[in-house]
Image 1: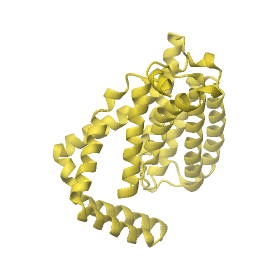
Image 2: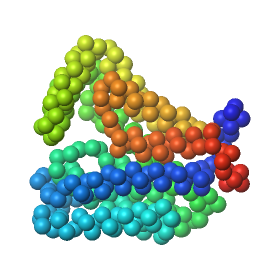
Image 3: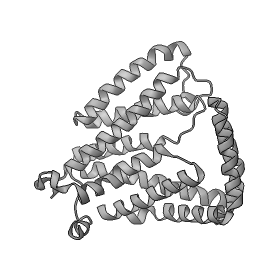
Image 4: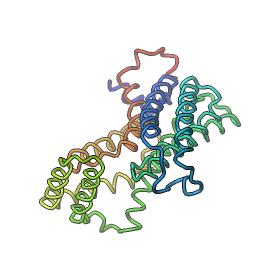
Length: 289
């Protein structure tokens, strides 16, 4: 194990890891996408690309099933590495369409990263076509990781730009936001348990302000240091574990679940390291060089 951990810093991403990661990613995307396209067939509050054009409800009724079929076909092409420049670009467009539809119905899930990863992979395949490397899947992984890291770094910059370092002391103002969020869930679902949970969480935040400030400070520091962890595969893995710990803590203490951000992060930053550490013997050793 010690030798494998040491080698993790020098190992490049492999075809085994790429196939596993992209399979997990496309399945994650498909689950969300098909759910959205099945649920929403109107645009009450145009957002995203629907601020540029506004199809009628009748149009969406027949367009959404077509988008489902097209998405499924391109998902299969993605799995089998078929015309990946075209496929990843189309998946990016389909993803933007789908998440714009969701946001146009008032559901904000911060899913922009998912679309951004497809676009980053499109750029990687385009560059591979121009200057084909020895390792065809290295750029796809690196560009995906860089898209994820950029999202966290930009989040930290946004916090500092809007609130400055005082943002870490803003935990006392979170109670109102928590109540607002859970009241929104109650209005959406009619489940009164959300109201009870929201009130309990707001009380917790007000009762333990120092704990919340410590968590916010750790979150900000972790996001700001994102670019320091992309030099090699081992650092990416360590950073992924730290981010996963942060998301778990946020989920347990604050009931904040940013699955559209945490899931891609785990897939492209944590899973490859786990494969190298624990499942190396399952693959042909030749693919790990």
